[in-house]
Image (cartoon, rainbow, N blue to C red; front, side, top):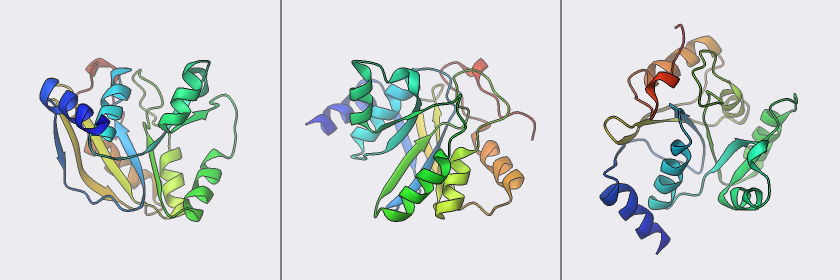
Length: 184
């Protein structure tokens, strides 16, 4: 019932389309961009439910207050303490290695404001756990959700990040002025 409702709302009512040609294995990281608005979360949740996926996501800890905290955790949210230097990437990579299924969505910009130096935690989790990274772009201008590339990190961070950023260069976020891939 919820799946049908989300499918109808996202595709029929809101007019979004999907272009997804990448296989989704049992374990992967989604690199999601551009992240320019809180609407990205709503679109992502509608898409995930419309397609029958359950994917965890990282979100700053400030959103995990009562009553939203338990709701976000139930939806798959994992709080991130951005001010602390923790071993979150190591912990998530170890968790991924142990589980039969591991699906995690991360917005590498880490904020809804323009930032040239993307966070690389998603990359290191995938590298340490030998997981593919699925590149998911959201384009508000064309109302499209696109995933046509995936790859497993090589360990050459600079080259791999260049490839990732170039994939997203033509996507238009809800607030396009808040998105940049920075210098390549």
